[in-house]
Image 1 (cartoon, rainbow, N blue to C red):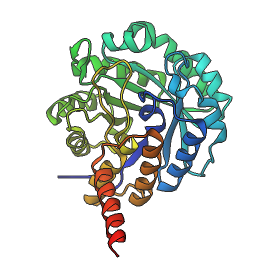
Image 2: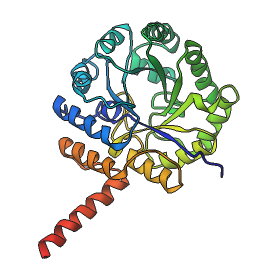
Image 3: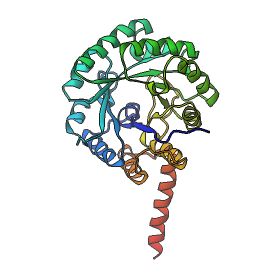
Image 4: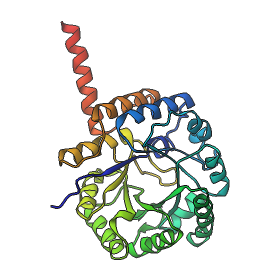
Length: 310
């Protein structure tokens, strides 16, 4: 097995992780959490979203969060942008990078964006063009690359059509999302075989949700095929408001454990990740599902019990 020497982990928890939570996390707590993430070695943090608060009320404070965080040199602070109005708000906050988004399937695109795929392209192109005029890098998200909660299985050729258009717009990277977390390695292989006939691996990042416990297996297959960038969310937070049944993202700390265990450099501090995960776990008032958090929680409990017996 040929594996890369280094992988970039892109933390999407403050955006993708919190957007699906039922309760609003206070602005100060979001800021404090991102400041903790600054200490983990992450080089990329997706801070928030400029989707209208009517649709994603959990991130209604995006401008205040971006203006309040401590910015660490070498860290990219990114945000999701749906349209020109969202871009204007993002620019007002001195965001480092933006992401545009759409789906590979018609059903999810219409539920998520309220437009057909063909209607979405001109909107995104306008955003990309204006962002580049402002000297911002632009990333693209493509959701439902394996299957759609409304349309069922999605063929790789359909994903390729969307990727083609985004690449033409000039996005520097395209994150391929298994939004409902149903993919398995053979499907990931088939998808990447199709895309890599036309584009280099460096164009892509993978964004796996772990609904059925296959995210890390899919990461391994992606690594084998030359992918070196992955989205993840601390503690396994996440989900899509327009994809019923989808669970959280692959957890950052579980992904980091896998990669470092295979001698792949991530640059991350595992203990700092756990401390940041405990912080947001407390603010959410629920236990996070990642395997590393289960272990850390058990170890912490054992230490408390041992201290009581001394």
